[in-house]
Length: 72
Image 1 (cartoon, rainbow, N blue to C red):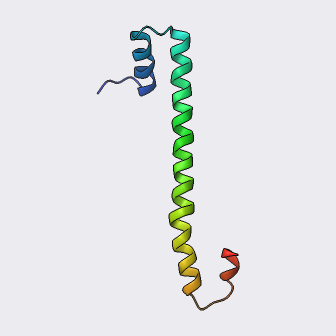
Image 2: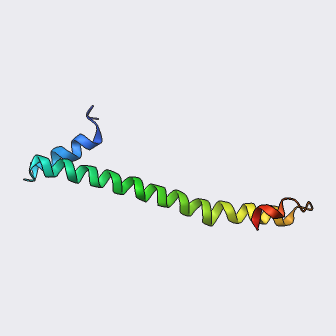
Image 3: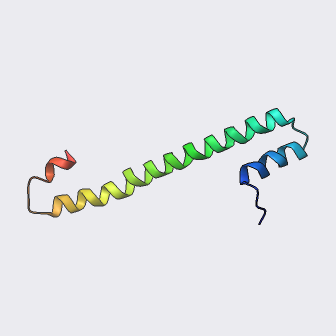
């Protein structure tokens, strides 16, 4: 694999298809930010939809009442 960072490969590809370097850097940055936001959204979705559902089920099945406060 190429030793360059993936962002540099993306920037170089933009330049190779005729996009000016200043715009290529901006596009690369926007794509990286969008990817980070998407991964944050995905992590939030997985946590809220899957993990919390199972935690709520475990709390409801337990006999102690103090943990019921956690789901309210």
